[in-house]
Length: 347
Image 1: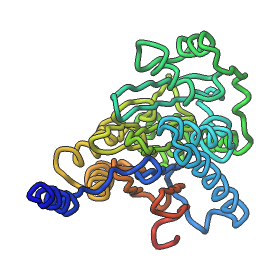
Image 2: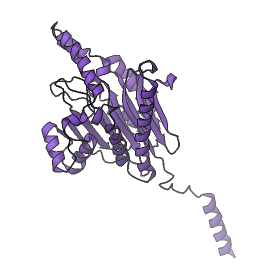
Image 3: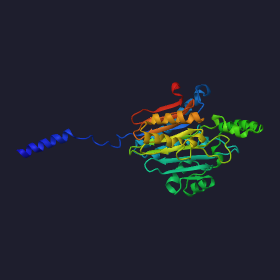
Image 4: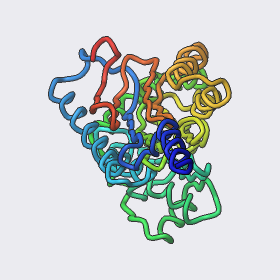
């Protein structure tokens, strides 16, 4: 009888102290956010037809990445899937829509990072690799390096079997017209001998345009990636923040994943992507607080313009920017698809 009473008491005690069952993969948070560039983006300078195209492209890229996550796939696969969709669209300054250099060519940059291990890969100044983000991932997974550049990066891409294209594959009429406008302004200023001052005050419209994605998968792993054609009329092998780990791309499972877009020189100088995650990790701030501090209180006063997309290890998403607009979209298993172009007041 005593044994029966003891067993009953133990059973009741166990029921009363039962902990919540661990979440299955299907119940764990998953999230993805993407961007397609920031800058002077207003309803006044965009036709309704073009806006529809941008919203469709952002939707397709987000859904492509989210489908990977929903199927139990990895965050790095989701990031690559979303970015490659944008690299294939002439709407964005990455892949097929890349801007032109001063010499009339295309030099593309990309990077990718894993939050679980801190592994990263990047390529810079490449002109014949169809998918720069795929090349960045190959550097991470199939070499002992982090960043490869120029002809060496292209040789490596051929070695690992990545698809090669002619540099003219990236040509678009709109980007060519932008180059002509930029060259006209540059040459007019060169004639005055004030080239350095003009370079330093270069019109923001020619600095902007990058694509990126950040994701959290059902295994709790974060990843971030960024891909770009760089700056219109860039010269002398200029490299921006997109392939620089810590500036344009960062991921850490203990805090967050970030991809940046904007005037790359400032993002490099202020180590923007890593700074945001450090504020989350070491100061206990939310990604919204950390992102706003860096984008509005650090970057902007120094003259840096642009924005970032952020996802944390709980699936929260934040997308701050200090320009008039930023092409962006996000989706998680707790929030519906959201697509934005203009400032918050114009959604």
